[in-house]
Amino acid sequence: MYPRLKPSVFLLAVLALLPAGACKKSYSTAPVSAPVVKVDWVNATTTAAVSGRTGLSSVVFNNRMWIIAGYTGAWKNDVWSSSDGVQWTQETANAGFAPRSRHRSLVFNGKMWVIGGYDGANYLSDVWSSPDGVNWSLENASPGFAGRNEFGALAFNNRMWVAGGYDGASDYRDVWSSPDGVTWTKNPVSPAFAPRFGLTMLDFNGRIWVIGGHSPGVNDSDVWSSPDGQNWTQTASNAAFGGREGHTSVVFNNRMWVIAGDYETGTTWYYDSDVWSSPDGVNWSQATANAPFGLRAFHSSVVYNGQMWLIDGQNGTYCLNSIWHSN
Image (cartoon, rainbow, N blue to C red; front, side):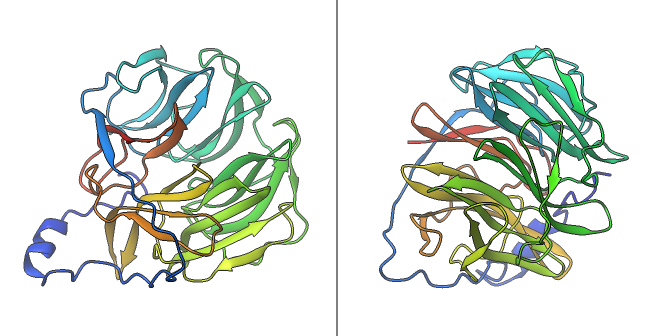
């Protein structure tokens, strides 16, 4: 069985028995001054050639959107690309890296990168790169940080960065960076935020941002930022979007966005379909309360051709094959 696959096998039955709203998170109230930016969503396709999957990664590279690996019921190492989000081309069925999911991918120094993840038996830390999505090169099999999935990653200030994650036993909060994908350096001081997995990281307004996640026993709704990856400031301790992990975050129209995700109540995991944005990391407004793409987590998101895109994921019962974009 997929580790930390949040299967809501009894979700529909529970919803039927509980009073309206009983399974909803309690959101903190957004400040009155927070501007409300609404967004609509349009379904691009539910029949993409790429099979529905969870724990995939996506990037924009060479004027195309890319889907890399993930879990379909089996761990995958295929790579797909599209110029329109509807028609997808399989660039390779078996990339050089091992099948995996809940890894991270970046675009850096004119290449696509794949880092870490889980392959069904092992938590990975290997680092791979490709100039074309077909030919992949192993840059470092053991970069220094422990194997993990559900970590944060981004390219910032001419370096790639990795933070947090989960290895099957422990949550992490260490921060690592590399100028080339080969040599990785651990920041000497641990950040002030709690160890966590399922976080997102963004480059926004000249700072690294860490948004949400899940630390031991806590659905995190805090937001942190740093100008250098070493000195961190908490900009929100309980952001209005509420605690969650498995969400995605993008920068779009001069705002940071949080899209869907899941959260734990007791021993049950519930899924979100809401969308939030912020111009500053402090004030968050709900752009969509119940987006038509439905409950989901462990999807991927990119900004492409002036739109936010949401790709696949899971809803707790099955993997999703649906691709949406903002309108």
